[in-house]
Length: 260
Image (cartoon, rainbow, N blue to C red; front, side, top):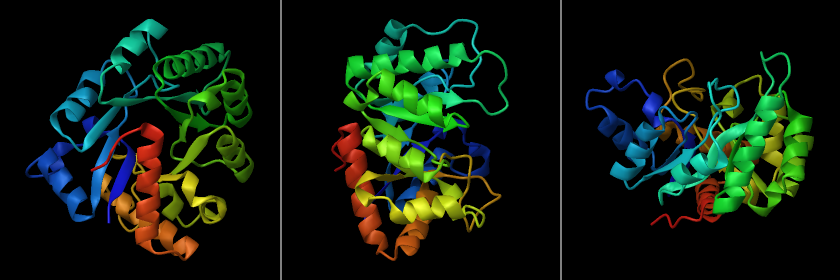
């Protein structure tokens, strides 16, 4: 059995918690049969750290992008993003998207940033990693307007409703579930995980955040993708092996990587 953590932030882990540092993180992941992981960029300042993990470790891939809430003095241009994303181990653009939670005023800047990321993704033929929060209508509208279905991608750490999941899947996007799906109050999300087609599903940790049960409240790590997949398997009354096989195949297909 083989699992993939489709979204984590290795450069944000507190490695002081592990006696052997990142080696312990990778060993735990292997023990739990999480054999590959995508280290996702959220800003350009720390992108070299993200890329360094991907360059040094064969089981790690990288993405480049500017999170929708990240504050910068100057927005990166399409050419600047494209140059960073041209590295062979950068397999996606993002995370990008819209986040209207705790943000007020004119949000045109956030929408323009989102559009630039979509344009880069289309230019390089690399899929998008979408972060969306309290911005359902605008997220789908911009994906349609920019013809993001041409390249596709994933709505990561999905916490929205069925209508948005369906709209995203209709636009050639996958839906990724994090540890949130294991939370007791995540009833609506659990229903979506049960009823959506497995061929459109990914699993992730978003480590070091959103630790799944049974370790909720403790720091997250990529190996805990296993508990997300096990929970979904139980929800769907399907073998964990089936969830692992299909979500791994989905990752390989979406990001165009051969997971040997």
